[in-house]
Length: 276
Image (tube, rainbow, N blue to C red):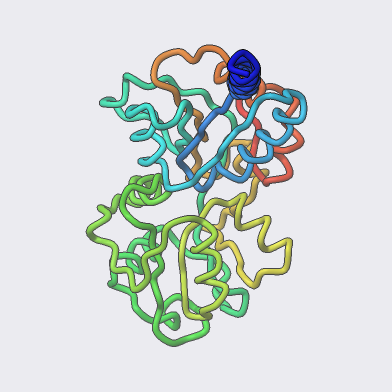
């Protein structure tokens, strides 16, 4: 009887070991890439990730937003293999390698019911610095202007301030938002509001019927086409960044994201493919 019991124990132990080895092999076969950062870049990266996963059955790609600063911090700390950054890298970010995947511009938006059809550079400065507080001073619908601005650490805020010669602390915002989606929703829900977002994001939402409108600047119209031909002045490269040169699956994904194979996805998000 002892031998029978011992044999049963051995068989059970062997089965448990085989199952553990199978689970371990399956887990090893599935490779995960974590990507975090810019909310401007996240929608198109998520679509690129779906296409990549469809061609690579054992690869899972997790895309999380949180702003360009989060993307940089996560890559540096090893929490993500790839960061999304919607601005040029700074001098103190030389430990990171940029990989441009698209190009975009930013522009001011207002509610579609607002009569103002464009602003001059100084008017934008005066509005966001709190020196112009009524829409009647900008040929708009009248009433107090509600300034919507991005939170610290957002690349869109940095580019906006750099272009208009403002410091983030100078912006007299009544509403602070995080990502583009929040900015679009806030302005769409307030006829007195003005904010600034990705041109691509605004064009996509406007086409979908959201009641927002992009504002011209100094007689120029903010469009994806103007970003593509270089005539819109507030533009930026959208980057995937890695700590050092990428390797393995991360390198393969970045090469795919920078290839013509995803130009249609970039265009669907109203962005411009990278220079090649």
